[in-house]
Length: 258
Image (cartoon, rainbow, N blue to C red; front, top):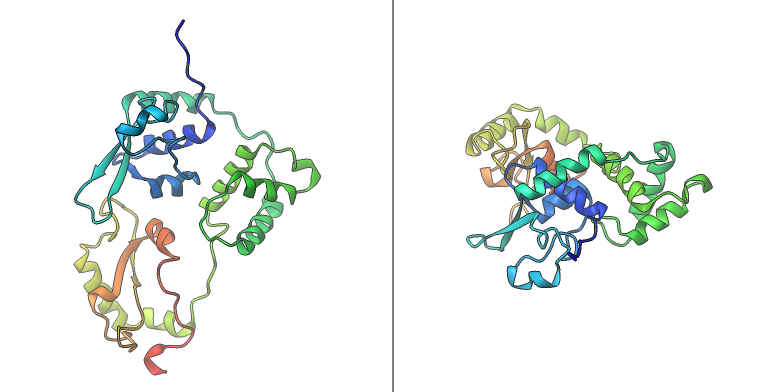
């Protein structure tokens, strides 16, 4: 009698569906950004084939995805690709997918998630089952029996709309500088350097904008008004959202005149 493997976990289905939408594969960080799921040997599988035996029910162990290692990368870059078998299964789940039974009103959910996010010790936009249980306990009684996967799906969907993004106001001096002819020339040079495309991925077709990578040089002097191409970067909206926490905050006062 042939032993049948357990059904895919909901997190594995979400990973498969994210990879199915990608033509060029996805890094682990990109999969996490798209799904809110941290990749592990249990859900997606180990990176190296030699250790695959220990994870037969992972997506890699089932032959639904395969990793590709880029040996040229300074930091070994792993890109995950979906197989034809994985595509077929991912698309079959689209028709079987059941909507979340109960939807928490955003007027209730958003403040609770924001309060939780602002008070936890780590900043990554990931939610463990322990996190979700704490959030669920803060909901009104009628929602406290909500399935954790369903709650997570609602949080991830709200996050994708930018509901939980930090809304930092732009200092007046910087808003005025970005409208100046001086900065227009900086933009022109940076966009010309990057061929008018996103510096992270030339395949991204969204409109790109120029952002500062730094406001002070190595000597602590302001670069405002004398930027080199390396002081700025061109990013599409998607990549800017991903990298916003890595880019420096705009100083409240213009460092050029301090």
